[in-house]
Amino acid sequence: MREVLSDLLAVWRCGQTASVATVVRTFRSAPRPTGAAMLIAPDGSVSGAVSGGCIEGAVYQLGIEVMQTGKPMLQRYGVGDDDVFAVGLTCGGTLDVFVEPLSRNTFAELERIGDDIDAHRPVAVATVISHPVAERVGHRLVVRSDEATGSIGMPHTNEAVADDARGLLAAGRSEVLTYGPDGRRRGIGMEVFVASYAPRPRMLIFGAIDFAAAVAQQGAFLGYRVTICDARPLFATPGRFPAADEVVVDWPHRYLAAQARVGAVDARTVICVLTHDPKFDVPLLEVALRLPDLAYIGAMGSRRTHDDRVRRLQRVGITDTQLARLKSPIGLDLGGRTAEETAVSIAAEIVARRWGGGGRPLADISGPIHREQHGC
Image 1 (spheres, one colour):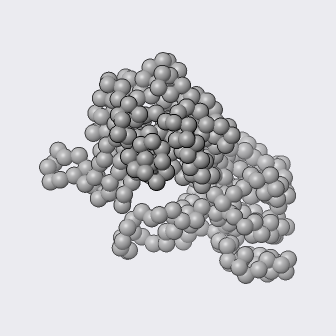
Image 2 (cartoon, rainbow, N blue to C red):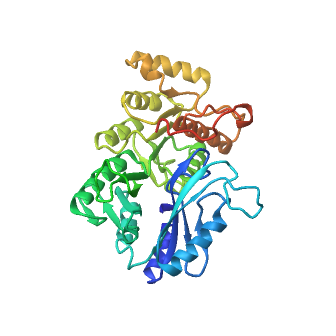
Image 3 (cartoon, rainbow, N blue to C red):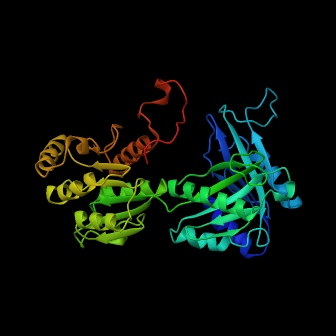
């Protein structure tokens, strides 16, 4: 829902009803991930996507029906047959899409959830997508760290779902949970989709150089909350880095250590060290490599710079195991030259690290295209 939230809130604030289709479950090579959403507005306009084009037309028609009837529906889409008019996923995957009507009457807490997301406060929405009693479908529970509002059943059901949703929220995962119709954890019959809206993962870029502006653009495009940090106020100015969420003037190692102390970096955080100046990057990398849970640590520089950097880090006590976490020279071998091309190679390495990809052309390998989550 995050990707269509602004459009949905515009409809919601006008007191109208929209349909939102959400991918709640995927199998094999489904084209969009769990949580991908498409909004059908009252005027028939569309934003977002659930499949990248394969089934959008069918989901659109279902959304119109749901908007008219007010009844949510769960629909599975798989491979189409030989009929040219059949609806199916040409990629060979399968996905479940839940389509529901949303308005002030059906989702009174929507605006507050939007405020939570904007403020980077974690929140999860647990929605009943399947139940033997049709009237229970669409009931939801909004879960935060210190409270749960709404209801999807008896108090013990709400408690069980809230506990499970907090676990998914802490892991940054959205998925379908199964319970008995009365809320028993080991039962079957009721399915609840938990949409986790954890704060965006962070990308910390150190070094206010031209490459940093390009990397910031890539980071923002990939959904990261981007911070650029440099000790030189002449270069670390917001105007030079419009894609960054914030620009900080501080010594890099001091800033990272302070962020770690307050819990502002985690296992999803990626760090890009672009200074290639030992007085900045060696103290910074010493801090970064001693942190146990970072998704990615990359440093720019030539192979000679890298070798010198490694020797300096070894002299301050960084172990070979810790050094193995460092990606240097940063990025994949794409043959790029410009700042923008270099930024693409850095982004590609981060994506490969996250999902366990090898960085080879897909045409040269066999097996599944999409992988289970790996790394950050």
